[in-house]
Image (cartoon, rainbow, N blue to C red; front, side):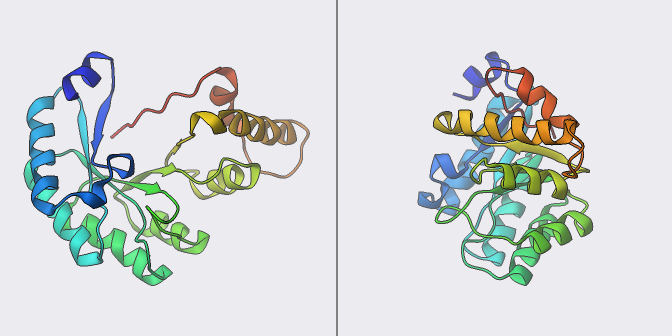
Length: 206
């Protein structure tokens, strides 16, 4: 599978994530995935390791494990049950344990967790290792606009299910239209690539 993805032109491999049902895997199995993926990639593309854990200590331990395996970066969902202080510490402990770039996979419960705007802003302002947000909330105008405001200085990816692509494009177009008509909704120039394509393609820079 890794070889197939590379031959198909992927820029990076990220595993195991929500879609891989990482929560069904033991730590031993996750370590095996990290090592096998790094070995199969052999330096041809970047490798992001999914290190979402059931606790702060668990996530940090997975980050250490992935770092030893030789990955290039990490990706993690917010903790499932946590307040803002715990969520901030969760991501800080992950990067402290690894010193690697981190993408936040902002997936909603039950596979992810809820994180407030205030907590997200603090993470982006204080954690120099967070380089991107993979947004998986519903792609309405409020979510897109709010996320763009929070992430002006970093990479932003929207994960859009096929059935939601029309909603996403409609919401993006509305924000673009509002900006063109001088409504105070912030800079939407980075929506142009989205609106110019019939299909969305997500890439993961590290």
